[in-house]
Structures are given as C-alpha cells and as structure tokens.
Image 1 (cartoon, helix red, strand yellow):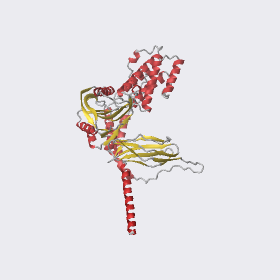
Image 2 (cartoon, rainbow, N blue to C red):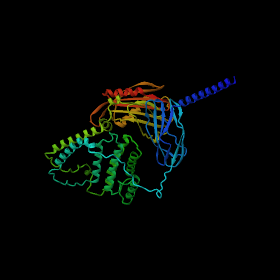
Image 3 (tube, rainbow, N blue to C red):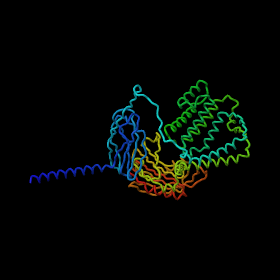
Image 4 (tube, helix red, strand yellow):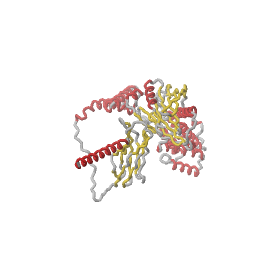
Length: 540
C-alpha cells in the first residue's frame, strides 16, 4: 500500500514537471521576436552583425536601436528590412572603439500595435595586442593556386582574336598618313569661359536625371575656376570658409569693389553645394534654380568689379560669339573609320554580355520594365511611423527630408521612401508627415491641392482631369485621387501622356501619402499600380 502511494506520488511529480515544461515551452513560443549575431566578441574597430527576426509579415515596426548606457557601442549602418518566406529580418552593423563589456538592452518591436521585446545582449570588446619587439614580422605570403594551363584560357581566344584584329584595322585607318597639325591657340577670357561652361551645364540636363550632386559639383567648380583665373585666388583647393575669408581680405586690401551681397550669395551657393556633397542634402528644384541664377550673377558682378577700369572688356563682349577653331576637312576614309568603330563597339558589347550574362548587364545598366515587375518576386514592407504596409516590386529607399524652420512648430517629422523618380516612366513614393497637434476637421480638398501644387513645382507639370473618391483603410478615412499630365521625356525629347494615382489618408496627427506615376498607355504599369494600391494597409 505504501509502495503504491510512493509510485502515485512520483507519477504526480512527473506530471507536474511535464505540465510546467509544456507551459514554459508555450510561453517561449509566444514571443515572435528573436535576435541573432554573428559574434559577441570582437576586437576594437571590428564589426558585429546584429539581426532582429520577426515571425510576422504585416504591421511590423522595427525599433531605432537602443545601445548601451555608456554609449560605447555605435551603429555603423541600419540595413533595409528583408522579407523572407514567413518572416521579416532587420540587420544592423555595430562596432566599438573602447575595450570592455557592454550590454545592449532589450529592443521594443511593435507587431499589430502590440509590444514585444527581444533579449538583451552582452558584447565583449578586446584590445589588439601588438608586440613588435618579441614578435618577428614576416611579409605577407600570396595565396597558392594551382598552375594554369593553356587549355584554361582557350575559350578566350574566340573573343580576343577578333577584337585584336578589329582594333589593329581601326588604328591603321586612324593613324595612316596623319599629318600633325597644331590647332591654333585661342585665348578665351575667364568670364566668357565661365558663362560658356554654365550654358553647357544647362544642356547636360543633370537635374532631369536627378544627378543633383554632380550638378552642384560642376556648378561650384565653374565659379571657383573663374575666381582662380581672374582674381588669382587659390579657390579650387580652398574650403568654403577659407575662400570667403580670403576674398574678404583681398576685397579690403586691394579695394576690389565686390559688394557684401555678392560675397554673401557666393557663400550661400558654396554652402548649399557642401550640404549636397557631404551631408546628402536634396534641395528642391526652386532652390537649385536660385543657386544657378546666383552663380551667373556672381560671375558678372565679379567680372565688372575686377575689370571696371579695363577698357578692353565691355558689356558687348559678353554676348559676342567665341572664335571657333577651323575644322579640318574630313578625309575620305572617315566613313570607314566610323563603321569599324561601330563594329568594334558592337563586338565588345556582345562579348561583355556573353561573359557576364544578359541578366547581369540588364540589371546594372538597363533596368526592369513594368512587364518584368509583374513576374518578379515582390516585397511586403512597412514604412514610416505610424507604419504603412505595402507590397512593391522593389524595396523603397529612404530619402532625407529637412523641415523648414518656420514649420517645425507645426510638423514634428517627415519620412519619405521611394523608387524611381517623378520624371521616370514608373515611380512609387510613401510619405508620412507627423504633426505636433491633432488635425481636427481636416480639409481634404485643400490638403490634396497643396500636395499636387508641391509636385507641380518640383517637376513643372500641370495636372488635368482630376478625380477623387472616398477610401477607407483600417478605419481611417482618406481619398484616392487620379489625374493626368503631360511630360517631355528627357531621353526622346517627346511629350508623353502620364497618369498620377495618389492615396491620401489623415489619421489624428498624421498624413499618409502613397503616390504612383506611370505612362498612361502602359497596361502592365496599370496592373502593377493596381496591385500596389490593393496591398496598402495603414497601421494607425
């Protein structure tokens, strides 16, 4: 009897352990958030890949990483969210330049507006010991490879031999009986050279290609080169502050006659260029045009101040055409040379495509068409806060937005993610604007009109056939707006008919805008647009 009671008691204990174990496993499985690192022990300056995984696909908001309390661990880069089969993954690259042990606290992740926390992480950072007295140094040894034979390179002959033959023929026709004639040297006044370069910069249409950084680099190079040639100040190698300080000193000592307004304009243009090149600022088109006009004004006013007593330089000289060099007469073999050059370029292009593959060349240099967007893998991601979940054929890239000083009392923050550009054949943009106070009795008509006016100012287009209807999304009221517009294609220089679709939602203190532009006649683009719009889900 006692023996049976002991057995029953042991069975009950085992049953309790099993129940507790199952309950513990169940609790562990309830948290859909996990972390993973490639290492937790590094040397000073090395990197750690810190990864947060979430077993959900929709309505997920990843954290802005909370680092150790001492601030010794730094975030090198926050990578875009990766969409896996049934989960999302966010990666961060971390480093530290101080040895010691540091604890990364638990990170907060929002899933369907519910809070989940990751585990904390202990990071060990060790110093690098180098003893050059006791440790003998040796040169780096190269990696040993298996010896190559002629057969390993035989396949290259089919490409190398024809290219070499074509190159030899081209060089023969180009250099045979070629008379060396020195082109007459033509002196061009610095002001004329600067204004000519400004005109050439306008013709490059860098703004239409969204190459803002290159545009500002060339714009400031023009004005710096002019200053160096005409005023003889080392402008090309000077920083903005050094150049302005030198000009001020030179202006006072030599009575150059430059007004304070011109020097101020020069400083503002150079600072704008510095922000674009080094701070990744993206000014609006009106600011860029204003800087372009300011540079031309600076050149002309500076030229006038430098040569005010020079009778050789008159205002009429600015409008006079530059002397052109005499173009040598074309030789009879020019047509043959052009044909051979075309054939050579064609063969090289075929060779590159054959070696790297058509997919590689297309992805790097051509891009995906809307028909290919339909067939490729799509990505479901969340953008902004409160987040907007959307499915797109490409991951949208974050853009930096600077809030003007006069609006900071009203607007708390703006986040923008996009793919393509407003002047391309297909464009996607997701923008969330956070306001300081709640938006009571919001005027949708005025809000939509303001958004369209802002786009029109950036691109210089006019919207027609405007239509809108009420659209609800997760209990949030909004509008879906469609409009047509005509735009000159920067490549073909021909006008194209385009379509704009905009989702406009207002949620208490936030405004969400989802913008899609496309060619009106592109049926594949219409299908891509419809799929994107259907996937939009607000997370209020």
